[in-house]
Length: 272
Image (cartoon, rainbow, N blue to C red; front, side):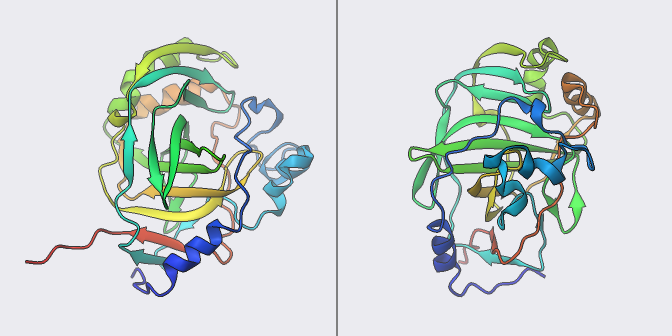
């Protein structure tokens, strides 16, 4: 069962957030320097030694991804609905080597978290999922990466299982094909509306973690949507073939949760 202990959680989360300097280090755009192959010289176990400013990948205490275990989750209602004010904006599809990224040139609106405004800059896909729920790993994970005016990072993640095709990804397929197997390949997509990305639930998990690729910057506000969406086998194959990654996956291994608190937002039921 999910714990219902709500005591001092708002204060704890606030204190955790203030421990960090702004997360100014974005994910690296050239992914050739690292790999996802376990045991390799540039694999996940050695990311921290590739560059000095990547050291936190090995030494950090608040790394992502983690298992969202219901044994450690605290149910809360004070976080409120995820406030989104997204808007259509011009975007470019980019093949980064290990993943496919859709980048909005001038942002595509924003979300508000803990009183801070974060602008949506890009999204990308991981397969299989990086986060797990009660130990279960899913087929794919979408990351929507936001940044505040002072350089803090917030990521909204959506998990997928095999099933019906994802409507948003369906609209992106032709652009992904054009950059297939072209490292740093770029294709202008035109105006893309992030509001077309379906979440399907107001419930979500919230915790403080890190980027899941080098430089593994900590202090990232993670919001993982509770609803599991679907993606087709053909869409997953398209993403994999587009990057032609020898490891056939681009998910970082699970990281220790240590003493972190994971909150689960569930709206209050209105009683009449």
